[in-house]
Image (cartoon, each protein chain N blue to C red):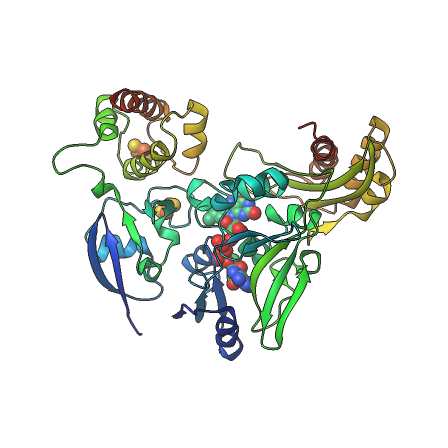
Length: 287
Length: 159
Ligand SMILES: Cc1cc2nc3c(=O)[nH]c(=O)nc-3n(C[C@H](O)[C@H](O)[C@H](O)COP(=O)(O)OP(=O)(O)OC[C@H]3O[C@@H](n4cnc5c(N)ncnc54)[C@H](O)[C@@H]3O)c2cc1C
Ligand code: FES
Ligand code: FES
């Protein structure tokens, strides 16, 4: 294995473009090193992006949107009080990943690019309508997080493309987000279901809404049915029950040791309801 | 295979070693620097026996490459005592018998020291969540938690 520490994303992309054999980028390494150590994936080329200037920066831009460098860790996000105040759901989703030790290393970008259907930060990023900046052999492009997952373990990035940062839209007024995950333990387990919600209100009326489910579909997706149910309405019990039903209907899970199909479908509805309620209260400044 | 030359600081001492790019920091500490305090329990980030700090950030050294230590500051359990003078946490772990086989102990000491530096007055719940990635197969955790709560109280008084 060859190990590189390029000093720019362009250089990282160039190395990856010319690489022969299995190539991986190294952000926090909490997926890459586990895969390497257990002989699941043994890279020929490993490109460490952590020394690239800006890769570890969290920046609030002039328009209120956020730029989170590709090597920013979960711990660094949790310690950023302003980011946490504006996007509590996103920060909480990231914070659920692994232990304190894992938090010191794991990144949003690694979580997204590893491509797990149960990745915790991805439903929250997608609900927030986040995008990523992709540096490739043909220049830089912005790609919506929604368009990243292709199938379990696979993303829409092509050879030579590397993500330099995650872009989170400006929070704006009367917005709120939430992420909830269900696991059989209290810490250190993989989601049975994850649910991210982001919405905006005008008075009691919801004007924008996005709900995303994790661990119940082969790729994490926005449940567009929920957007239709919520927008233009107040959040009352009838709507909440309809949201739960829509989330359950959108779930196409598998049975494994953490839960059966029936159980996951039920839990998806419950989490959808609860996360929607939290996001709604946050949007209205009640939490 | 090309070896990588790494210059780093371990427990305050400038150190150098040569490693294979696939070797982890844990392997380098144990096999090249003879610092065998950090243990390998799982090798996959689950147990915390290999906990060290890297630029003051608590990490699993089994999930860090040796090559990534270049230019960094590493602290291991060997750096916790001051010469022959044990750290208050170490004394309390002995007093409370907060260990049996001792495999988890170095990792728990490093992790707890890092917590108390950030938060000198943690609740029991905060301690338990902070240590969720440090597994102990022997003690049932109770004595560990009591030793930590008592150390934290003593250290606050001493200040
Ligand atoms: C003990 C343990 C517990 C865990 N618990 C959870 C959990 O609760 N929830 C959860 O979702 N995950 C969990 N994980 C998985 C993992 O920690 C997360 O997926 C993490 O966010 C990965 O981030 P990373 O920076 O470590 O990625 P890395 O391992 O560095 O990289 C992961 C993938 O992303 C690619 N990549 C990295 N950076 C870039 C880039 N800039 N551009 C393009 N591709 C890139 C790599 O090539 C690789 O394929 C756990 C892992 C461990 C070891
Ligand atoms: S050996 Fe590193 S976490 Fe278990
Ligand atoms: S004392 Fe044996 S694992 Fe903790």
